[in-house]
Length: 288
Image (tube, rainbow, N blue to C red; front, side):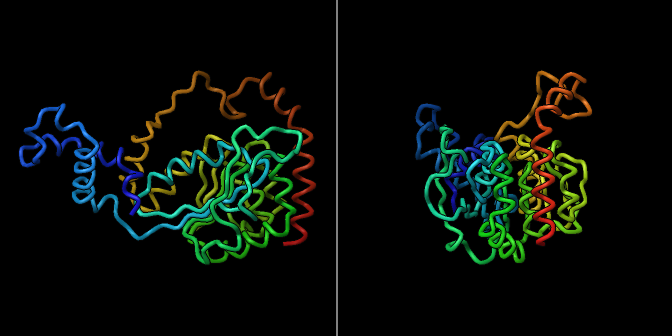
């Protein structure tokens, strides 16, 4: 079990117990107790006492990477998934070369190295996940190697999931036909062309399909999924561990809330993208 990955959360859960007399560390001075070894003792003790909260079968998670993905779409859910006990996380791509921006003239500021190729991917995943990111999403919607991999894995995965425009890639692979789903607000209605039922929501759950809205919804998505994989209390503990308590300086995070000038600006900026997304989705829709 990947216990050290969850040490900070476990220590937080075990703080109250650490103050009880029966704990052998209780009578030590703070200086004596504050060592890596003592922290590990607290951690192991907490794992035993909170086994009902943190235990469960190993969860196998596959997160697809691709050139041009939006990094926050990946790292938001990844931060949550890494907080799960007893899990394997596979960062998936065709090969193990660094994945960055799609255009060769663009500098990949934070490239990501895949851990697992499509060919090496476990046969059955608990979670199959696709991030968003344009224009990379549009390319993936017509990449037959990617679509075949998703269709094969999606047929047996416990949960088929995405964040942002990643739902368009799932849809192009034929995995959202007849399912309610969401996407980034700019491409939300494009889902119709892929047989999905566009549904507004920060996170939309329809049977084993779980889709998150744009970019920052990835953390909400991750916590929703963590509750299904483990328990609601565990998901709440992860939320506290990550200190996910958003208080944005502006209330402009959706078209319904944003002022007219902001909606007009982004609407004009995304007009070409929407046209391309619809055209790509129509082509993909004819093939699924």
